[in-house]
Length: 369
Image (tube, rainbow, N blue to C red; front, side):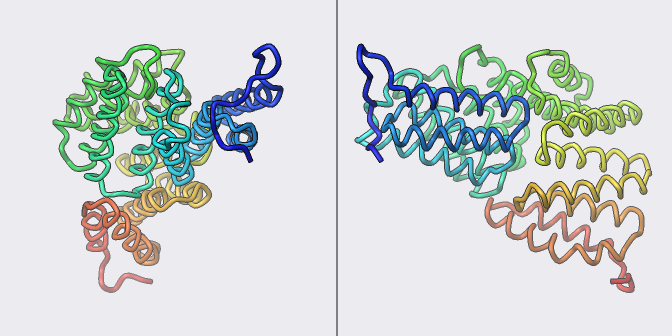
């Protein structure tokens, strides 16, 4: 395999045929990702990476790895995405490839790798949250040192998510609002839809339900909003409507999330079914909530990942407790408790363990098991 450098042009300065083939594979993977055909997207991205490695073209290789990362992350494989981001960042620091990756296009790929590294580690609970804030500090220093300080929205959005996870909702909202205000076309990071629903989610959690609804509905009203962001917007419209005393709106939004998630794969479906189960529990529809919780757990086990399975078991546990169905609750608590401890230890928090202890407290001593 050639050492990754700038690559060699063909006769007359033309790119070799292999370069065009890799470009086509990257495009094929990107199109398949947009259409939620994740297996096809991953296969095309894997072949693009292999082709770029054979060509020894560092710029083409980081683009192929970035597409591989996207395909994995959209399919819910955050561990695989984390590996891809780590590889891009290592190439950016490697003296053998650093100069080749000094272009504006390569810089955008590196900036995304910083952001998506944190996204993947946070989503799959792979690192202490405070360590992730330190990684974002590194990202900001890199952006400033390379003259790209205006590319901060994605970093700010990740800061918002981490502060929210740490319980600092005021700082989380400030970061999310700044990210949305600084968002501009062409800036590497996340879609406009992500910045909108992030603000809407935090406003909803702060009790500003009508204001939150405006941000969340804007995602659905925008024809350019990616399908996954429409799922998330519907999910938070459902939670928002429950808290605002609008059960019919909540049911519609949750059903919309599940319908859209059916086009996006198991990772999106777990998020949508979690919301639908919550809505049904609050409505007292225990049979419907139980069915949603069972579908949620099945989707989570198919998708894999400790965090997904934890959320699915948690949803099933609270459904069982609310309907006095203590046999299933007793049977799932050992796995749920273990996952809660493991995830809390990884992130340096305790809320999952505390929540599971409260759930365990709902179990009568003489409950069947």
